[in-house]
Length: 501
Image 1: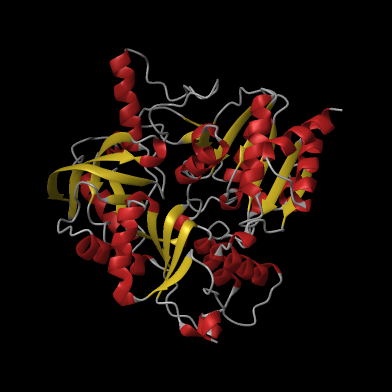
Image 2 (image 1 turned 90 degrees about the vertical axis):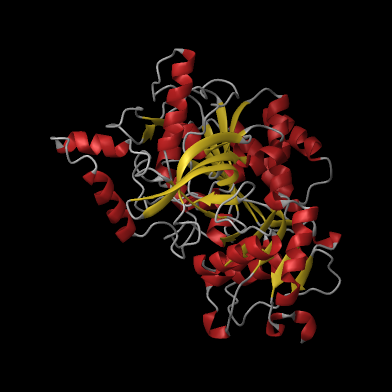
């Protein structure tokens, strides 16, 4: 039987005797793949250390050996890169795959749902806990509800099906109480036949991982509603988790940058305000950088931006002598990706390669900056960039600042008679579309979600029992599970040190 053959192949690709949970998940996957329903979907949920990533990789290798068509997806560029490395197969961001640009003309911005030209294809989505189903004010993509659009896209293809992989203990999408993409009830609401697999048995705890041991403790508090007190963290006997006091932080960070690299080291904080403090201190005291922005700086995009990638595609099309049609989708066949990212997403990291022409206009400061994007094969792009957001405590430009910029730029087009024409000019204005970035040595947990780093520093800030909430536990669990090698807890209180009690 096909079900038995697929089960045996995945088990062999796993390379070791599966746990009981993994055996059930493999059997469920085989049933899902051989189900006759045209609307079959699978949810595979699991916490850190349960072998979720290992099993997903074995599934991908098995399907590749069988020449089964599949597309790997993740919500962010960083998550897609991690998924691709683990699975040994190219992965894309969800937005890049399922949306197409309406046009490159100024009067028709935004992205519409693409046509799914695939058939007999499995779409596998990692880090599905991050998939929102509310617009959150972002209407540039399709309906504005990512989960709705993902389901519609996948099942519009002939005999296509969807597999969602994630961890319900991680932070849910902003503004949502839980992760809708990992809820069987939500997915059944689309008319789907849902197959479920739950991985709870921790595989790697016996390897002496303090990260996994303590993450499991935190997750148990979440899943069992054990809000009886702040989590007690165990350090004794674990080499991969430690406390870093404030007077040791500069030396510790310098060591991490030297050993793991800047791109593999991150500080996770509770607020943008705290992240700004860390970024300022790291650049001045660890990296010795005095300029506001300089070559080698790591930054993060803090607002979706489509303008500069549109310009890049237009320029490439002109150079090739082809029509720059926004509806062209080079991803529909094979694994070849577009050279230019579809857009620069909120949360994308970039490395500064060159800074030129710093100037002040409209009450703001700008520079022409060339970036490379490490999560997109180090693609290089030059963009007019706002300097005011670099060290701002706000997530991006405030509403008042956006209005100020809008009105000031519009005044430049006061000589254009028709308002529609002025708006078209505005949409193509490099200053109105300036890239908004922040230094990215320290970020909030929401910004870090979906990524993994070798060395992770976590600063939870001041906490009391009165501040204990499910949201805090989700935050702490997500922060802990970003680390792959070393987790450093900054100024961790003795009251939350299990070894000090």
